[in-house]
Image (cartoon, rainbow, N blue to C red; front, side, top):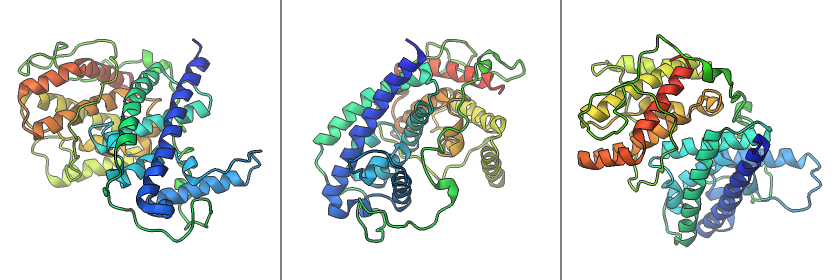
Length: 373
């Protein structure tokens, strides 16, 4: 199969997800909020962006007679904001990932692929594998959503000025950088073939568990194995991330130093300093791996929470081959939930085995090595 045929297959899946989710979102918002569902159910900033996209298209002759509703312009970041703003209406969708931050990551990954396909750029095998796995779980969640009654759940978003879904009222001015979700997705996601051949002899090894992942007391080791498939992610433990948690480079790190790490990380992402960002992620990953095997603590993911919700992650997802990071943190998010629920070690070990945790760790090691970390 040529890469164009592979892209076409990926396009069919992405198009199906969008065309199935958009009308269902509209239907459930309208059932709860009535005729002005677009004002009360769509966050204000998202609605403004959709209106701008509609107006931009209206200025071009598309030779199209069919009327397009505002929801037809929603892409994955928009749909994520709408779904999470009305959580009570979309619980099956929220359960596609064990935490909201990871769901955001998954939707960003879908947006990266949508943008690459639109620009006629090759979608990688790893992205195809993720898309296939996600699509199976998405269809199941969508069926649950169709069967679920609409309850009074979720907090309505702030009301907007009057208007209707078909009108295009002038939105309040916003910065040009926020103008359209789609172009902001992948301006530098090229997948350099040379990166796969590069490595670093001075990189400290990731302390990994034994590939069998059988004994929690087994000392971390370094190993090598091919990248494994993405985890299933269908754990029924819903995890609420603690936004107030701060990253700790060392156990005794002072508060002002933690704040400095956050400031340095933000500056690095703003300036596309990949080395600094990946180095902080590497420290957190190795720290989490140590916590998983040697303590019963709940691992913190503060660095990942910042990175995965920053545009840097979306722009560099393909270029830096960051997929193993989202696989790793999805498993860790599930472990966090189990440890908070005081699950026994045997249950956590079984979950790690079932999730191919050791293989994911090895894929992470290869990813860091390719990026000279």
